[in-house]
Length: 437
Image (cartoon, rainbow, N blue to C red; front, side, top):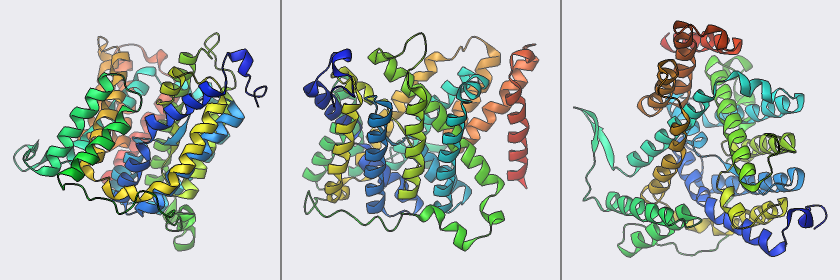
């Protein structure tokens, strides 16, 4: 085991790897409760999604550890789950079963382009500024959802939105949760988001705002409501009814966001650990295969796109250097299957702080955009602002991809725009024309 994971070469040992794996798990354990809460909004069974989330995270992380040998954990991604529920299912009216099929297909495409080796070609075709803008926009969208779910922000006939009733116990609890989570994160506590949820839930139970669970450990919920549901559309609809233009756009959006989110996370975490050599990541193809395989597997189980987690950096900071730490993290997700009774305490007031703080973390990429160049600032701005205002990640990406070639050509920089961007300009214009019909 030590030889396979190169303990001696990397200067690590079992105790460091175990501690690193545990730290990573605690830093991202919030997804076990947040993901079922978000996907239940699409009409999915919360208990089944809890199991699917834990299994997808465990399987994906273990594959990453065994095949790529990196201390990088995977789980259903924040932002992608929001896109799944609010943009695809609720926004476009696509059944959640069909949306899962879209996730499954995006995973298969991801596997194909990874095996064929065109990853670098695609990455280079999309300007970095739009990648950063997409990440920041998703962060704002997630934060807006959190504010809305907690009723910190509510609808208004006069101004569309306004601040909610802060004397409402549930809303007040959410505000407390945001404050306590921010304090924990500011102190640099590993797993601050998870601990913030725990403290918020405990305070909520103390003041009778959150229900008290009857037990902590219980039987594992049935996976039947979601397992294999991705293939249900084939028995109910024709291929023409399934593979609509809308679904194709959804698949491309899943692919786009997951592709660049994974690439960015992998390189950021790997660079922190000192794995990147000459601007290249050894075994990058294996890592990407682990991620794409986990996406398809997760879709079969019944969850939105599974992707690499930046929270893995906390485990690396704690000493993790090999894939053995990922095995530890994966095993802990399997143990977590027994704690599903705790779902009853995970109300909107408890999950909202996690969504808001994750939004803050994702908004960091705003700093990487060159706002001084107008031809860059315009498409980036439209990408970012459209996501929360239109309640659609896909719309934000589409607007950004339309505006980028226009501003670059207007600035006399047409030759710097990859031909793929011109193709996407036409595709997304046709997409909006299709929506308007």
